[in-house]
Length: 323
Image (tube, one colour):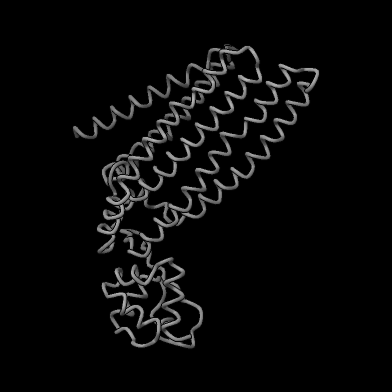
């Protein structure tokens, strides 16, 4: 396979157009077109740059007899550096998985609807549908809907597993990464704001069907109103999820907001506190509940512990700042 064919294959594998590759290479689109049509050959520096972008060895690009790419592990144990190709790949994966995660979340939110509706029908018309059949059928449908949702969650997580370090580690970016991400962020900002407005409006208006159905005593209408509420809320949540994942993927590469270097350092410190705090809370909850048998009131420990944890973290951060 000649160099021209390899450039075409690797470019398409990364999902880039000739214009996008030309921008990454700092050349014209015509240059890329000539390389791919074998009308010209890139110089040695350009080939090295191509190998870095594609994540393959220069031997693979130079030698026609090497048909399969020899991937180069550019990841360092310390001081990781995110290349432009990796940044493009990360954003592309996040765009893909945002839709999958939104779909899985929607399935989870819609899963109880058959159980709710069938329960309402059996309650209003017990001679038409027994409570047992309604319950069993509803639970079966719930499990059938939840199962693919869980599979989608697992698959989505595996797709971006290689980029998990962006959440927790401090890293450097190759020249051009920050500029590329900021351009995308600027272009997406209007869409981000609009989607948040739409999603918020849906979540607020979603209660209307339930409110309207409350004027009737027919339980079927009430559960239909509740089911409609869940559908509208699910659409709103899906928009929120897609919007947030896309926006946060850019913040991760820019190391801004919740993913700034300072926040990562603070998170590393507070993780140790959480590892001690929550096991202690669990021990207190179980100990108190078993000794007093007050399971109906011991649940209060959890909201109190949640509020107290926030206070503990705030005190620790204040102490660290003063020191």
